[in-house]
Image (cartoon, rainbow, N blue to C red):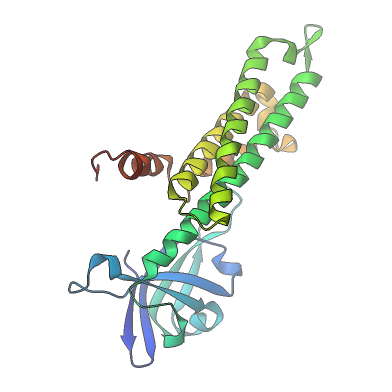
Length: 250
């Protein structure tokens, strides 16, 4: 984390940059995590959270550079060059920012997992409909087990992942610490979504690449969630270390 916020009187001065910031071009406010601690501060108290008025910040050194990327998603780099924000922009206590962010991370994982379940169901519905309609050699291709089994497997994996998403959401709603469940929900749902996406591409064959079917677009989008907002490998590392008690790997 390179973005730094330095206290200066009744203000904070921010310098640094943020990469892969979603919808920065279209937002009025930004929840900013920045380093406020130093070498004399315990590591757990290095970070603070701020609510930044982006319209004001743009007038005093904040620049937004869009990133042209593979999927239809507005994401940007945000640069801070001596951006001054009022002391009142600090959320909670200085140094407690990471603690605040952790809870929101669980909510984000559950939200993304829910989106992945919806994506998987889209792929399964499209593949099922196409397999019933597409006729080759006088019979629908869905009559062949080589087509049936991948669709059925994707459906089973999606339903199983959906149960974990529901469990994580229920625990979060009750105010229970659900880091384990939220991470596993995101992992299982994103993997199920990608499995369903690949299955749908295979079911449609060459027509999957035709834009009119919307399969190629959703296929590209489904791939994103095995990487963002947290990669599948990082989730497996979390489960291995924090849940199973295995030695830290990094």
